[in-house]
Length: 317
Image (cartoon, rainbow, N blue to C red; front, top):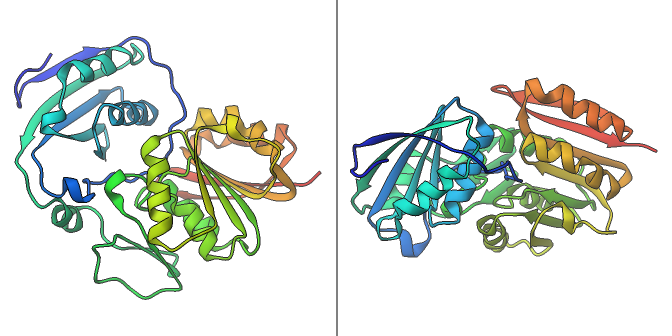
């Protein structure tokens, strides 16, 4: 257990199972006005053995107890919480409910208030250019290229600035796909960035779904920032899907969720439609492909970045 800013602990855990985690997330220092200056506790967590999905679970669970910013690292995560909201007991409960196959090394550091907008702009989130056609920027950016598509994302909720490989891969797929007059479903929508680009490219409507409250709120906020009126955000998972059909489905979530929910995606995908999935590594492609082909979906190609993959399938009955 840890008690001081520099003390470390190794803690085994025992119970939590994976759940849906959105991967349209590129972690940020908070930027909402009430958090622009504030004292923070920085919690550094090293995960052994490291697995990306357990880090996603930690991020999601910590977000429910007040952690509003995360910086993903190769072997874990740096998580930030306003100092007056920090609870050692609440954090320990999260560790205690994780699978017992993992060891967590934890370090705590107090960070005095500073201009987080300036810190984030300087050190983390620079305007991002996708495919020489699209620029993703924050509201505070002043120096960015004029391109065909411009997306403004407020990174205060940490999800989907485009810097994560899976988000970039999905954006690239959207850029090279026909969105004109298409009905879109965005599962695990994060910041809403994928739906925003689809709308800018002429999509008829976008339904954006995420299990995370911050993602739901972030999608609504970013939709307004980009003056988009045809995106409907919903909080939940694939159980929300009913009889409405879609021409194109984006699903940038965790591998096991994709494997579990793919039949539901297929049920609401129009004949001739396109399913684009990401949130998994190249080594997982065979499992994704086998599941898709068991549903009579046809391989439409994939793209790869740093071992992450976006994989597309067509529906032809």
